[in-house]
Image (cartoon, rainbow, N blue to C red; front, side, top):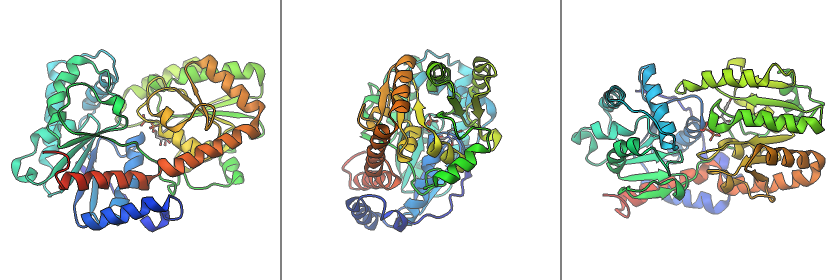
Length: 417
Ligand code: UDP
């Protein structure tokens, strides 16, 4: 495993942003837990929502007085083919899981578990890639450590064969955390908590950018800033439905010929399918000069994502399956009109017709985009309500509070073994 350097963050900087009661609760819990050692483990330091969350959360846990680390597992490239099939299988696709794949999965988890040489009070393991590490931890490392599995995906209807294989590993933890209660599959004996993820309002991706700065950055990518822009920021993944977004754009463009589309999608190192899928999207777009396909390979980093989200006329997240949808949180936080697929954690964030729109098809999404473009002021007011909802519910201190509460309850024996 290798450790990620998360730098420093100060809780004090968040006091003027989030509700006062929330900070008071954090202060109380951190006084109780001061000195406890925390480890987060996941599969990648770059790309996707989990890495985003940990860059914000881990330094704030330390600032709350609990020394915290983040370690990323190391594995050969073939391992990520296996765990990508886990991801798809847990989200409901039928997957093949031959004996060699099991052996590879188990050997990687065993090797990474052997790297755990320090003692921790709480270890939080994210998603299926490092899940089985818990099975290989020796008793001496394990005695007082509380192990938590943090599942970020919708596993409510998993591939049964795969699930039967993973279930004993999940049940070996002291607690499991899911984004939504609905995501918890049958058969778990481990105690379950429901905790939604959050974004960091002070990270370069979410800090306030002036309209001029956002425009300046977006223009550098060839966008005509005088013309309307539709945006989806996501990995190139079928569940995010970028092809559906292209259909939405085409339908909107029939009424607004000036419309442009930006599909901004990072290529994660643990997502081998992304490259293949990107090819499909390129083919589908068929060299339309008003469609911009951009990624980290084009030097799109956090500030550029911020600029695109701050500048876009309409943000869509047309997922057909979604864990939570941090891109929706990010769009709302920038007070941009946001339209999301009516799946996963998106309805927790968008109240249909109040803070944005929820849609079930490309046609419906296009219709809502046209309404947003026709009445910008009305939709700006809705987006401001969305921003307020995010401020109260989906900023990092709220996640910190919920995790500290879980630690406290585990310690007090209110949950777990
Ligand atoms: N993201 C990014 N660059 C990209 C595409 C995505 O930084 O080109 C970020 C995005 O801003 C968000 C996260 O990756 O913070 C995606 O999280 P989400 O929950 O939407 O989806 P996941 O990838 O975890 O399924």
